[in-house]
Amino acid sequence: MNSLRKKYKFEISPQTVDFNYQITLASLTDLLLTTAGYNAEENGFGMRKLNEQGLSWVLLRLAIEIEKRPFQYENIEIETWIESVNRVSTNRNFCIRNNEGRVIGYATSTWAMIDNVSRRAQDLFTLDNIRAFESQQTVPIEKPKKLDSCSGEQIDQFKTKYSHIDINRHVNTMRYIEWVSNYFSLEHYETKKIKRADFNFMSEILFGDEVTIHFLNGVDNTYQFEIFHNGKTSCRAKLVFEEK
Amino acid sequence: MNSLRKKYKFEISPQTVDFNYQITLASLTDLLLTTAGYNAEENGFGMRKLNEQGLSWVLLRLAIEIEKRPFQYENIEIETWIESVNRVSTNRNFCIRNNEGRVIGYATSTWAMIDNVSRRAQDLFTLDNIRAFESQQTVPIEKPKKLDSCSGEQIDQFKTKYSHIDINRHVNTMRYIEWVSNYFSLEHYETKKIKRADFNFMSEILFGDEVTIHFLNGVDNTYQFEIFHNGKTSCRAKLVFEEK
Image (cartoon, rainbow over all chains, first blue to last red; front, top):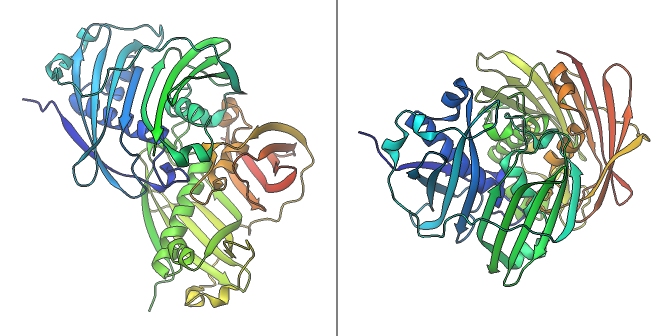
């Protein structure tokens, strides 16, 4: 018998907070991905196991809703479970609680499994046991949105460097979130808080790629971004803020 | 009675490693600074205590020598102690050991205490008890070097952004190290290892400052950098590599 939902504890470390002493959206996402990694490992289909077979997990979409980003040294708990599994993708959900056990946020994510050489999606039903973890349990937030192309103005341009690259030899997920978070001023973060963030990850960025970031200022505190590498779309993001 | 030397344990977390699965120089420095922070706190003159009096610690110089940067999930121990204290600055040393207790590196640092408003150095002899921790115990590496101005070519230019800024509302020390580490290619890190790094921190960089990085390629695997903000020198760095 397996347990479909598991909880993991974290302390918000000083290296992960911004000037407000609150964890950045990028570092919060990193904790979610760490949680997903721990849980997949325990369930028998973690990255190490997949790598042995020349396979990897790839994050396709992510949505996070957070009431208030936790502060430095706060203890939080992230609960995670698999909602559904089909041949091409699987949905994993998250519930974030503060030290008193009160829910402060939810997240939901979509993943595919790829072959490390061909980079093509593989049939998830070939994975031992994964369907036994399908809970059909949802989270009370909207699914990760499919984001439209954003043809706004170019706001940043650079080549990817050593510090952007992770053990998979591509740009780490945290960096995309950092890059779009960097559009905003300190004043913005002082007066507004992130309510919801949606990310679509479409193609990986490698070392030395030319990155451009485009921005479309929507209405109602909604900001949309598109990250290109060598002219190709890599990531679309939509951040919704609200007044503090 | 106080203990002049204290040891702190760390596990190398996945967020801190590069594509080689080894902790980056920036994250290793961050662990050294965390160690310094813990120890100062225990000794009664940590950042929190100083902040209550409108004061802060400022890192002036740092030198690190490392045999091999530790790998992901490795457990290391960092021992730290104060070597000397004079009115304007204090020297703190570090010894880094691997899981078997073997020494894999040393570091040595120079700090001043500043007034948060005037940003001027304050007399360290006014600090309760700090001289009781003066051990006169050295490390077997050269003191942090005073680095010369580097009038080499400009290799990078950008404005500081949200993700660069820490709780002190200036650019975090880790970022300087990341910026100079980013000069090198993945091939460089595959064939060479960092032997020694020297940093001189000269003036703080604030949000929105225009940063330029200059580089002078020396001989014998020695690389020198100078970071300017709005035309003023902020940091000088010297990295010495050797073949793996």
